[in-house]
Length: 141
Image 1: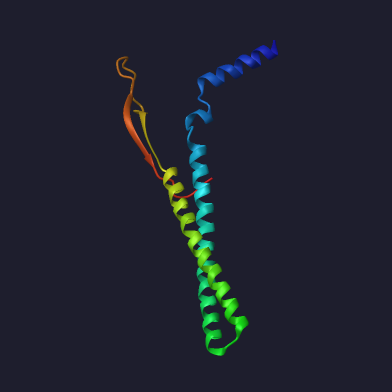
Image 2: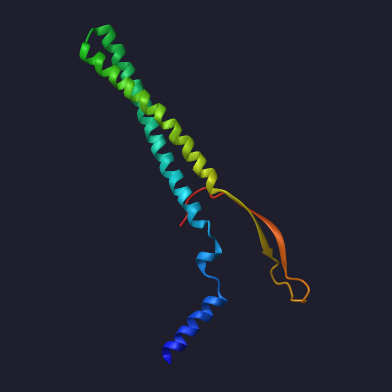
C-alpha cells in the first residue's frame, strides 16, 4: 500500500510541475557551444601569440646569422621562423571557428509568453506571442 501511495504521489508531482529538462531543451546545446567557443578561442590566441613570438625571434636569429656568418644560428632562425609562421596561419581558422560557435550559442526563438497576475476571466488565456532573443556572452554556472 505504501508503494502504491508513494508511486501515485511521484506521478502526481511529475504531472503538476514541469520537469527541469523540459523547460529549455536547447540549454545544454547552448552551453556546449559556449564551452567549445571558449576552448577554441583560448587555443587560437595561444597559437597566435606563440607563432608571432617564434616568427619574430626566428627573424632576429636569421638576421644576426646573416651578418655574423653563423650557420647554426641561421638554420635555427629559419626553422623557428617557418614554425612560427605555420602556427600563426593555423590559429586563424581556429579563431574563426570560435566566433562561429559563439554566434551559434545566441538563440532567437518565437515563444508564447504569459501575462503575470492576469485574473482568469474565462475568455482570455493570458498568452501572447513573444520573441525571445538572448546572447550569452560567458559561461556562467
